[in-house]
Image 1 (cartoon, one colour):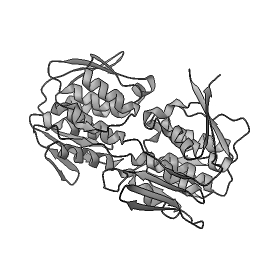
Image 2 (image 1 turned 45 degrees about the vertical axis):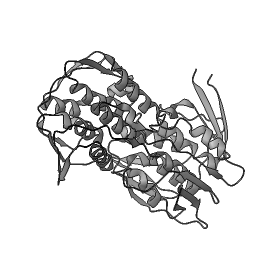
Image 3 (image 1 turned 45 degrees about the horizontal axis):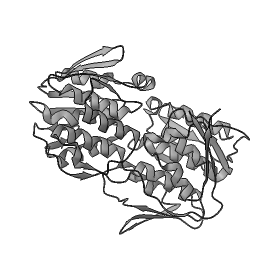
Image 4 (image 1 turned 120 degrees about the vertical axis):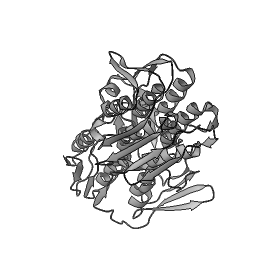
Length: 410
């Protein structure tokens, strides 16, 4: 039964240590390469995000019909994986919203490299075969996942892969993450300008421990930014260049002090109000949009956020969802193409009795929860949607002193 959730602001300063979920982005890439290398067990501490659990199960069981739930990364990576499973046929499918999202550029690129993919009623039928590989060009793909999916199977191609990525390059740090994972598992990758060359090679099942997730850490950075006196320890969190969302530490540095310590990262609210930048470019880090949008709105600060061209194609139309939610709270904002504007100067006012829609989006739920810090409390329609990336977030908020009440939705 669906459950709603009400979140109340802490009554005392936040003092806590939070064990963040593991990075599902790194875990999913590592699991793909481990499967191709023949040993899923080499990926350690992969976490319990729903997308990762589904990917792990499907790679292990290899059923004919692979239902990927709502996970875009899971679906696109497995679509590529199925193409190199010689002699096997798989049907790739998922929730209705997932099948509505764009995949054609990836499918066309895989076909150009020799893959057999048919569109069927359930999703996509893939007949695995030996791929010759070669050259392919993607011009302004709507998702960097297309690039990563192709790179992950490139070592299995007879000629390797010469991939040109031209035009608008969204979420480039995720492609760099893919390259790092490939190199960890023994692939040879060379980057030359707009071209990434991956040579044919035998992948090795190298042990990899998945690190804490910087996308989840952004939520706690936002809490510290919105409070006058918060001190939060994030064990194991490090700045190492693997995850683009490390940028949150820089974006919120006027209000949050981040100190690397032997056990991880200690973050504290800075004393004295300091303004954040009024212009953000999130072309590399679009997953920061929701926590940053709600943080700026809660602080009443103006901001222009660009680089958001593909946010209408996520679990929900994130630009539209943010604009509608803030309008309900009396905060105007607007969208022009891939840019979102909020004029600032308005106080968040949650209507009495209001229940906010999460639209099936884990990041929407966590972003909305931040508003409890300025509104006192907020109620969301779906408590369980966060399972996609951060299943333990509500319990962690209780640990931090928030009031959290989950109940069946009538």
